[in-house]
Image 1 (cartoon, rainbow, N blue to C red):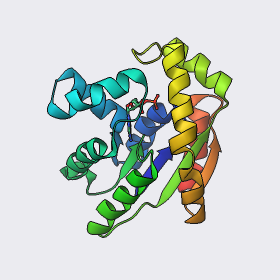
Image 2 (image 1 turned 180 degrees about the vertical axis):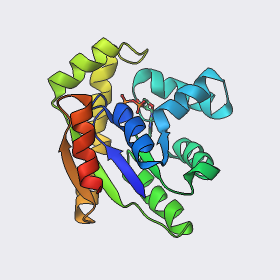
Image 3 (image 1 turned 135 degrees about the vertical axis):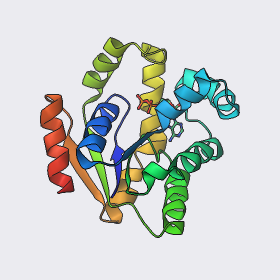
Length: 182
Ligand code: ADP
């Protein structure tokens, strides 16, 4: 099963993806985590990504493609995966479609976690990651609205999209998502 966990920064994709991957027994790919690891290890991709991640801008699609392809060729992805933070642009959605088609598979479901902007900003300010300062958070939200939110219509037209309320206890949100995937 290939599931895309979709939503603005701070809606809880990362938290939910870890729980879902465990419950469903499939792999989890967070492009944000992959970039942070690459930056920490000063790999070539990490050096290319750093300025964008620090500023809250999107990493260019060709750099994203490199990290995703490498991860999805790993053994653990054979039985499926939860995609967290990818795709974020229409070009990335096309690349994902092509990558999966080459493996004879496709996205099964896109789950859109919905949380209002005020709650998002409060959550991220509490988390306090290096890119969780208010001006950078606001930039990430506006980049999301401009570049990523249009994918909602794309996946909705494909009949793949379900929206889930992302407000409430972590376990309650997980249950709502699992109900969609049953
Ligand atoms: P959040 O969802 O809170 O923004 P992530 O950990 O998913 O956090 O992403 C952190 C940063 O990594 C993003 O602001 C962006 O710079 C980069 N990034 C992650 N995934 C992608 C992607 N699919 N395309 C472009 N940039 C990405």
